[in-house]
Image (cartoon, rainbow over all chains, first blue to last red; front, side, top):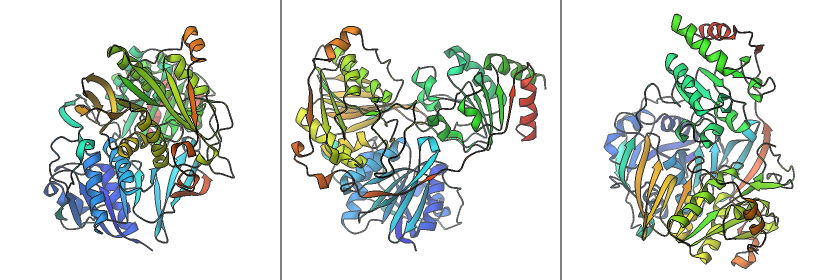
Length: 321
Length: 259
């Protein structure tokens, strides 16, 4: 059993679709006969990429002139649904914009959202989402019980992305209706922080620091180790909340989901909120003073010791190689 | 300037919760606390009112029982009053229903600005702030890390994957804030004493002009069909650092071809 049509909200640009969008399109092909994407921009920019992952059509809003995408994109999808041209389900990645659109769309259609989804199955003419709770110790399955469009917010890295090798997708206009004052939030300036090395959620190796570092200055050795191993530096929620590192570095339930080949947790105790964001890593190394720290429960190699002693020696030894 | 802050009272995350097998909702019969994520919103509201030279900070919350301990914390930080929608019928409400209820209360309060945490620490759907804005028909800026109000609009620094955007937004509006953007103050002894006499108004679903079948499980459009244990990851070797543990790490990294 499959649904007729699923729309995936596409993030990315003319260079590539985001990895989450590729994952969602791959899954959508299993769930529905027809897959299309919604894009906030010029549809021609992504029509080749979208087709490659199985989308038949790109519904594009065109240039939104700096407006935050939540309100206009949701209004455009809702307008299509009202004229009978909409999908059975909309899949969005859990990102800043994905959440905004899902939330606005749910209000516009008076339809519930299933959030934090890591797996999706068809059940009759409905969908069932799987969501991890309690830091991933349990999974709940939640089914849509109402008719109408099903909206799912899917966590990154829930599915393996696989191209379908399809032809370039058709591009169609998705008209944005008049938004009134609700669409008044407009970007006036964009600031990109310079970052070296791979992105946290794409890196093959991640070194993350936690409260066990003791002070903000000690985070530098986490960054040094990440750089030395050509990986990315991450952080637990505790030290983000403390203001040592920016939110963009946070790994966990709140924050980024990472699945690197190697994850090194330095001074992280392993609260459930953290584990849910990293326990899909292939290999986990944990360094922590407390032998009872929950992080050791998921570590392939656990070092009971002081990060301030182990990491400098590790850096030195790597330097000498 | 009047700022409404949405706050949630949750079980202490240090003592992870459990699902009630009957209702398949989070057990909330334990003592609830103010979600730490919301303390940033409360702090930001207090600072904005301060900067504006006066005004008030009102709290809006919802809970199936008459729980107030988390509200007391926020009142002790300096918020002026609170409205708590409390009704047994609320059990099982989805994020959209939650937003509809909070938006009703906020509509009655007519604030200039609504602040909410980006996501709660327990349910973490992360959609409620934007849904509130949708129900009210107001603009919104999620993932705000700094806010400057001038007259009838505000300039917000909004987090992005690459850094941040400056966003201009007319008021009234809704913003969501992530943890760490401000330093939440600790309630002073004076604040704790003052909180005891601050008004907390309790409302039921009916008081808001809504019926029981519009909220809770009945109104939610989704149901939990099963709860299963997630696959467990096996732990590997655990060793005590004898001064040479870094060599173990190097061996491990070599064995998985990371170096």
